[in-house]
Length: 67
Image (cartoon, rainbow, N blue to C red):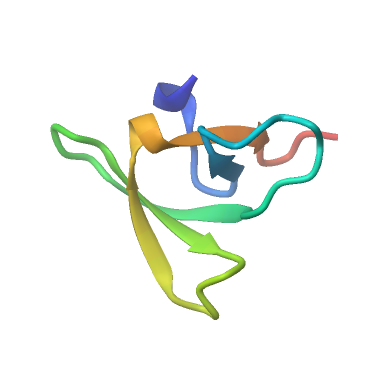
């Protein structure tokens, strides 16, 4: 699923339990199109700073524009 991450998607860390309550949520704001596909995520715990994650570290919990 990680290869389908797009700017504007709401994501979580992959290791978190999927029970509807996530310790951390973030919004994908930038994608570096490199060999390791880094994603810039505006995490709720970083106070406005962007954290960079590898595609294998995050999972989409809500697609941009999904209802």
